[in-house]
Amino acid sequence: MKLSRLTSFAAAGAFALALAACGGGGNKDADVPTLRRGISAKVDTLDPHKSSAQWENIIIGDMFIGLTTDGPDARPRPGMATSWETSENGLVWTFHLGDYTWSDGNPVVADDFVYGLRRIQAPEIASQYASLLYLIKNAAAINAGELAPEELGARAIDDKTLEVTLEYPAPYLPGLLSHYTTYPVPSHAIEQYGDAWIQPDNIVVNGPYKLVYWRTGDQLVADKNPTGFGADDVCFDRVVYFELEDLTAVENKIQAGDLDINNSFDGARTPELEAKLPGWPRTTPALITTYWTFNTTVAPFDDMRVRKALAMALDREFIVKNVLTPGYVPAYSMVPPGIDNYDAPRPHVEWEDLPRAERLAEAKRLLESAGYGPGKPLEFEFIHRSTDDNPKVAPVAQANWAEIAPWVKPTIVKQDTKVLYSRLRQSDFTVADAAWVADFDDPINFLYLLKSDTGQQNYGKYNNAEYDTLLARSNAELDLKKRAETFAEAEKLMLEEYPITPMWFQVTKNLVDPTLTGWEENAKDQHRSRFLCRDGMKTAE
Image: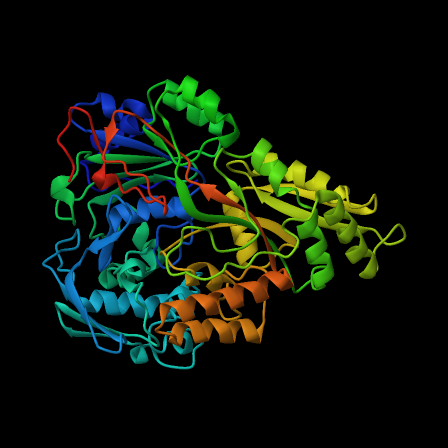
């Protein structure tokens, strides 16, 4: 167990104070106004270049600020950059930085962004998210070790002016720049402490909160960073983040008065929770797709017939109606409805309206044509996340697949969510569940996951040159209508090959104390602590 000593307080007395706040006494301590947040899984890293987890982003986004930042509605607004302009061809963006400092007093300068953008592409960092920034000139080649870091399309004109050159126009760039992969990082701290730079003793931040305590598998504590961006407006001087996977424990903490927010709840129990915790359950349509992925590099899932058969047998309608949160919608495509820049007829799998009996018959025929039957049963393992509704869905899926024929024999295995995603990134699975939350509001953020050069987040290693070409064409297309049509062509091609099977489009699910103010529902499910306040406290702006 990792237990880091506190550095922002005075030794032992401060240590006891932090533990008291962590134990639920924070809001009862008038001297330390404390916000207590539950997150749905264990934290693996707080390094913006090594994380890919939504629950880690809750903490990272409280401590770091990019060129832009998410407002309460999750739309981009100025962050470290107070203004910017774009060249006529949309390829060169110039950002003008405000006067901001790191928590150790050093100024935030353009070189901090250049350093960060180069670092995330460094092969030795092995960032899961590096491909998200391949739109920056030469990023992909640098990540592949083919060019020097200095060739990246990012340069400091002076301390307060950053120039970023793109491979292709990206009108969604301001939204992307609020994502943690683009945050500046403190080169002086990283060079001094290496991977340990994110530990409480060493971390240097530019946001309104700074990590002061981290007990792995239990909780993290961040205190107000007086010089950080937005610090003057925060209501809570301390935020405690509890790593809570057990939803029963979440409810118990709320009823005991020891939790203000949790980022998930049992959706099937929404009416019960509304009665038990009036005003707490919050949902809204989200840019979130749950999809299950096949490892296309290993038998039997290197055979499209097997992938299609298993996709057809899953009874999404039953699952959505009987197991999941009200408001979820069965998914027969990857890109969720409501996303911007997709004004084109949307592709779906061709059997979407087929009665279930016919789907099962076709699934059986496909598996038999692939050589499976009584003498050669289809045996495989499906791994699923340990959090949220996923453990309840897995037995339904197992039963759905067994309905195809007696010789279809799936095994379901629950995995700690952090472990499951680690296995996905290593392609150490046959079939697995996963979900994607939009980083920015554009179809490319979902479709790029299946590009052959995406890297670790192309979990099943789908590889189709035509698909890659279509996405490259969309990047070069300035006409938004034609761009959307190209997206639709690419998505249709991918859906016909079944590297994944979309399962459902989600609504956000949060439990929020009704006395909190400043909470705004949004499709990205992004809620920064600096905007939150409580009735009777000063108003956060």
